[in-house]
Image 1 (cartoon, protein in one colour):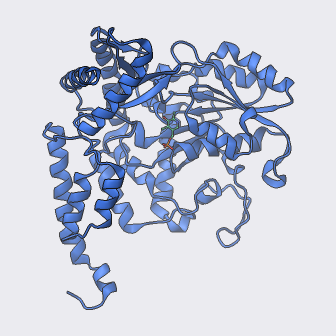
Image 2 (tube, helix red, strand yellow):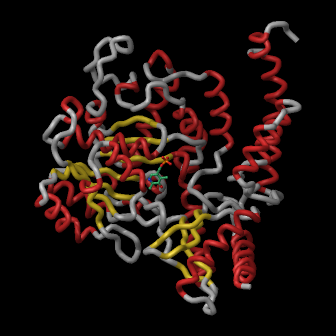
Image 3 (cartoon, protein in one colour):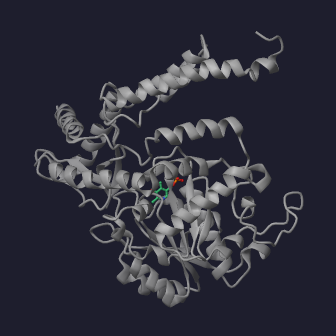
Amino acid sequence: MKADILHQIYDPEVLRQQGHQLIDLIADHLEAAIDGRLKKTIPWRDPEESLAYWRQYTQDSPQGLFEDILKQSIKLHNPKYMGHQISPPAVLATLSGLLCDAINNGMGVYEMGTASTTIEQVVVEFFCQYLGYDEEGGGFLTSGGSLANLTGLLAARRCIAVDDVWQKGSSGKLAIMVSEQAHYCVDKAARIMGIGQDGIVLIPADDSYRMRTDLLEKYYQKSVDQGFEVIAVVGSACTTATGSYDNLQDIADFAQQKGIWFHVDGAHGGAVIFSNKYRHLAAGIEQADSIAIDAHKMLMTPALSTILLFKNKSNSFRTFSLEASYLWDQAGALEWYNLAKRTFECTKLMMSIKIFTLIQSYGKSGFEAFVDNLYNKAVEFYSIIQNDPIFETAHRPMSNIICFRYNNTHVSELKLDELNLKIRSALVKDGEYYIVKTQLKDRLFLRMTLMNPFTTAKELTGLLDKIKSLGLDQMH
Ligand SMILES: *Cc1c(COP(=O)(O)O)cnc(C)c1O
């Protein structure tokens, strides 16, 4: 071993040896997952217990550490994983991640990411093409749907609001309109922007948890009458809790009529632009002024990698106009290749590579197969759950999200929430399967998102059987 610590830290032989072993570890794990040999999805440990474990952890070797981390992490590749909306990453995307982490190009300015910046442009063009934007369309990648939604809404404020809030700070009363079923990050974004609770105009949802677009006019007028300047309306494609797609065409028409910004939160379901079968769910999406799509949800990349697209790409340069003379020669120039001119991030992950590698190898077909597999399966699973009298479903699935609950008629309506909450906790502690929960119209439902293409009716039946037996246990 070389003497000084810095040579040890950068020893290529360590990379070679440990790297080969690590790849074997991950490949064995993936194989076991797909073959259905993993016993647990989530190795539940109380947080305090886990903290104590890692505090006193002493590794015997880096490989031992990697194995322990794998062992103690939730396993998205297990077909019994049906929880939160994050992809089991594709093999090539994982490998791209390794390369990106090894070379660590910073991306803020072109010089700090000569390949990844231009590849990002190619990825953006690919999305624009399938979305149906014309040559004015463009955008960039950013760190997560939450940040993409905030960035889109900041662009809305810059382009629509009468005051220049960016320069002068906030004085007026701005408002945005969004479904009561929208992801909470839209609410968060509005508050960060200084909009405040009263400026967040929540539009009620219908029985399918879709925005009541027939109420847009009424809520708009009410807000204007209260002295608000409505700058944007946000459509969900789809919502997080139930996977419901808002009627984007109606929202587009409304936004156009009022001259306000139309943003689509397509973090989860924007991926349908690649599916011939399911594209219709997002009809009208190409009329949005800005759209966020998470590749780490329905496009099989590691987190975070999010696409933020603009119908008119020049608007994307207006969001963050900053003078940073050490970064660029001309602050005002619309240089697509100096990405930090348009992003919140300065240093940014090389996320384009993880998407590009999938586009290169499989074209849109890979994305389409993933979406179709999961959306088709939701319809099949829904009918299985629906046909079992012990379960109650909350909605017909429009995507790969299904909300349902254990509903034993011997239990009063009031006690059902508590019972389902207990079942969900018991499931997590058991660890074989992983699903989540959600609140719908003040009632608690179990919620599954089918994120794994290898989940079959067998895993579903196993899960339902386990829920039934946990349900009976809880009642005694
Ligand atoms: C997941 C999700 C988000 C948040 O995206 P992150 O990438 O987790 O920041 C926003 N909107 C919807 C509809 C989502 O499903």
